[in-house]
Image (tube, rainbow, N blue to C red; front, side, top):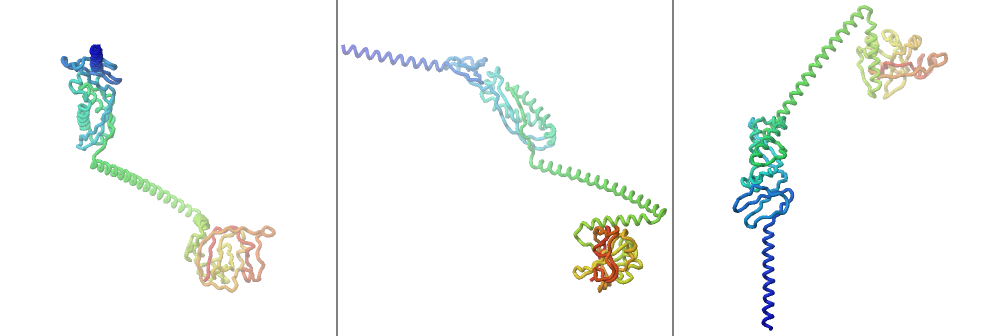
Length: 400
């Protein structure tokens, strides 16, 4: 009984082992008979007896005969490829170009691609045809045309590459030249050319400006000549009044300008038109004894009014000389002397000042009383209480 029980147990274990082995072999055979094609992929079957099958297997799980058949998976999604090429232009300049392609296989032609190129078809074909097409197209243009006609160059490259890739059953979705650069020597030459062009344009501008300035000078000279002729004719017809008017207007303008300047401008004692006075008289004023008794007689009597101020600055005595014709001859004719000061020479400078009249009773300017020891010493004179109306020219004479 014991021997029979042991034999039964052994048989049971043997059956279990056989079943396990059979299940393992079956599972292995089943696994070897199935293959999966993921999304965006296609499969090509190779049969040991028939070779590469002409049909392309789509996505999903499929059966095959183990050992007899073998699947090859292809990615049919668009993939980018980038490569560079050093090409020569029509004018023998070297250009560096970077080309980017978006490619995918022609799905119905996958068996043919597998037979002729294998699974790495794109790496075998695209760089070679890309360099070939780039060199052929770039050689048709000069170096500068690659920039000015870049869209046309890109179109030629794209069309040529699409045709060449179609011969290998490859579809190109996009072709683009992403980078273009020249050699260092050509870049330096282009920069020098641009600089020369800018210099040429600048020279043209300078010539044009000089021509315009020349024309303006001619027109201005013609206008001044015509104006001088008209003034000469007017002077011959009506006298020199217009010249005196112009002298006064010039004196007013100069005095107005100098009044706004804090500086002191010294003028020589010779002939000078800037003061609106007779030049000959002015020269005699500057060389006479300014404070002598004949000061208001002779050539100096043309001055409308003067005031001698007995105030010293830095040991000097100041003389104001200007136009106040509205005060009348009565004031002008008075003799003014300066007490205990003798002047033998002077320097003349120009300044501007406006003085408002301090009106007394009756609407006439007030004046100081005769005599006394005021600012004017002996005799009559105008004090600070009756300054002149408006100076358009003021002459300051300093005595050392």
